[in-house]
View 1 (cartoon, one colour):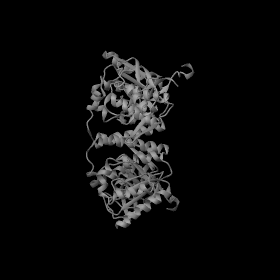
View 2 (cartoon, helix red, strand yellow):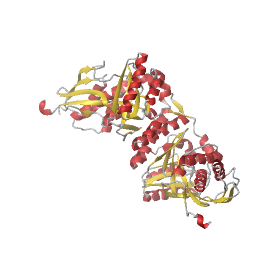
View 3 (cartoon, one colour):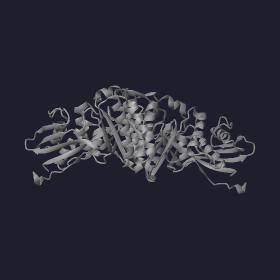
View 4 (cartoon, rainbow over the protein chains, first blue to last red):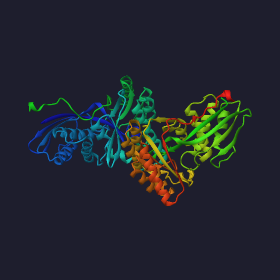
Length: 314
Length: 314
């Protein structure tokens, strides 16, 4: 294989109670990238559409991850990369994670699937270090594995795939302001009351159990965040109004996607998800806030090959 | 029904990562109680064997719960209660919870099953208040529902039944010293680092997922307690040695049962559980510590009727 076009999904991390431990991949939103083998052994980013991102391969996470993997595998080739971003950095939807995991996945394809998913996640995490200074795994793991994932442990890295009911549909509203992950992390207290922690892990247990058994009511009751949401919601315009409107329209729950500013809701079925979108839409429209809305099922796969280009065409 | 003999299981609360949120019921260890309807509308405890406990129905949790339920239901009868304790109070195996939940279950039988399990749990929690000052639900819920339970929320009370693989066998060693729940609670810090909390809820998620999928390796990796065990283990003689010996013998994990001093281990199968018991046994024997060892499957039911006495015999 000399060329591969990949889709790398947007991802929702935290998922209310699962702060820094859970995430899921979206089916209908993500970046596309075209990787072409070159003889130079260099990584070159030749095109970026859809966002202002550095072309320098030391600063762009796509380049960082690609170089790392080509080095690690002692590859005898380089790559030319074209990046087509479909959602903005700083959205809370794992923009850097999509770039990093898409790069890891694509390079692995060109290497003949040398690496496992857990190894790809580790490479992609190095992209997150370049992007935000921390080797956070929740977005990249969701973007590699697809579906719902739990980062059970960082040392050693242990990613657990959690099944989820196919009826789940996410509605996401992205106010077009940027909240930097670093800023969003600063508002989280370094210590929390033990009672808050217990309530949070009880909900993690409830959410995981509800996802396993397709118990929508349990999923709904468990989608509560006592830790990040109270600290971060003031960074997001009209958060409470949007969340309450989503729940009034029948969403199972709603919360901050990753470190924000996007707000996600989960619904049982597309009809409810559409109603939720309509209600979210009305609020931001009335307030004069620029925004984008996405409706998507949970993707049961992570980064994937699209429109495969056969080697015979090269 | 004029008389009912019930078995109320011993229970393991916390289950390592699930501090104050999880518990499971044992099949092979528990108390027996005989409840007989009387015309006096009084609750009388006429016999207590196996432990020194108060006969006063305001001080004995069996009496507290029974009186509460007879009052609430406006029953036109009283009860005579005989209590046969098979394990000691202050063991960390839910002694008061077995009494309270057994009483709630038995009275409900005499009332023709007027109350649901969640209502019985609430009544039994009032017994826990009488016993230790807190309306803790993990032991009583496990003793009422059986199997593994998650206390997802206290307000409103929400008990989630978690399926578990039938191969799971608990080995428990109970050093014959008393650790009072109040004392054991005092050593827990009121605040914990957010990083510790995240690691703990990631393990709760892993444990719940492992129980759902019979993934013994995941259950094993998740049976880690960063919160209560480090603070409490010094209250328990040779805790680390016992735990390490259990794991060396193949236990999936081991930890403090409830607030101690009992130590539990979970194994895949009876053979391993027996080996674990042998190893635990050797350590306490060598140290000259008085102890009891129990080996038990997880009970898939909570308090239950035994040797039913038919009304025609009354």
